[in-house]
Image 1: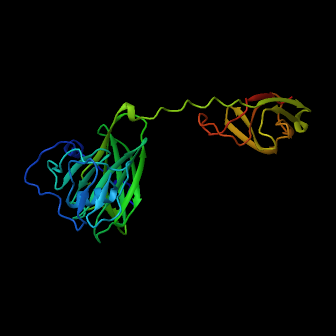
Image 2 (image 1 turned 60 degrees about the vertical axis):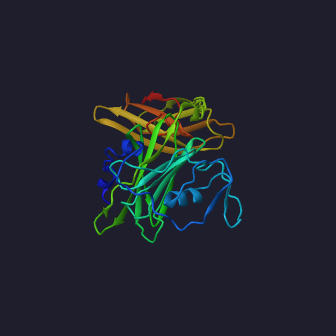
Image 3 (image 1 turned 90 degrees about the vertical axis):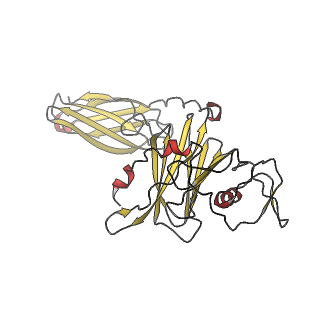
Amino acid sequence: MSRKLHTRRVGGMISAAILAGGVGLLPSPAAATPELVRQGPCNITPYGLIGMTWQEGGNVGITSAAGGPTIVFPDRLKCPINDERNVPGRNGRIQDFENGEVAWSPDQAPSMTIWTIKRNNQIHVHWKTNSDYGYDFFIVRVDKDWQNIDQKDISGNHEGWWTFTYNQPGWYSFVVEGCEHRTFGAKCRHGWTIPVGERIEQRDVSPQPPPPPPQARPNLAVTTTGSGESTVFHLKGSGFVRNAQVTIKGARIGPDGIFNYYWTGKARDDGSIAFGIPVPCVSGIQISFSVNDGRQDQSDHTNRLWSNTSTAACP
């Protein structure tokens, strides 16, 4: 797949999607959906493809006219907060809901809809062609305050979804592009959908848990016996994971570069270690040792929690 697909620009679509008005565009086409009887507090009833998406997405107290079961999803789209409207400069329509936004975006597939649902500290973005028209895969992109912050490839066909977790307030908007595999790379012929999004206020952001306390590093001390070809480095330490497989790293820093050497061993039942490592060496050369017991440390460039470094010179 050509990676150029992942640097496509959205341009001014975001601001267009959040502006009301527009002229010369038709309402979303009527969909073959059951007539709905409003049982809840909604003062506006969506229609057409946006209405079908709203019905499938769930609403409070909606019952089919035939007397079917009431659909109650209080954490889904909920009620519309305005009428379906045009999107300036785009073919399609958009409508805002208490808990999300739905757009009909016919420049991709004639009946394609895309919508967002806000729940807890996540935004769920869904899209569907609502027909036999399909794509091999989709690219979904999220912007925060009109700056791209993430992008994913999602396996395709007729629909897809993605869950995005936010931790800051701002305007989050999503667009989707359908693509087809080619012999060399891929082809995305129809461009991005109309953006849909959510305004996240500070009150919507869940408090972040405090960072975990830093892990205590194991202690290590190194001594030597012998000399020359019979040199042995003795490693003693404590604070390791009990009975853990450990990795021992020895680094020699010289004028010709840094050379790393590795050995393995096992910690004792009490978390201590004691190893003797024969290393034939030339007097005066220094070797720095550290030991890892499998624990991780994201602040270290190796992503491992190493003991303190203990340096000893060849006798």
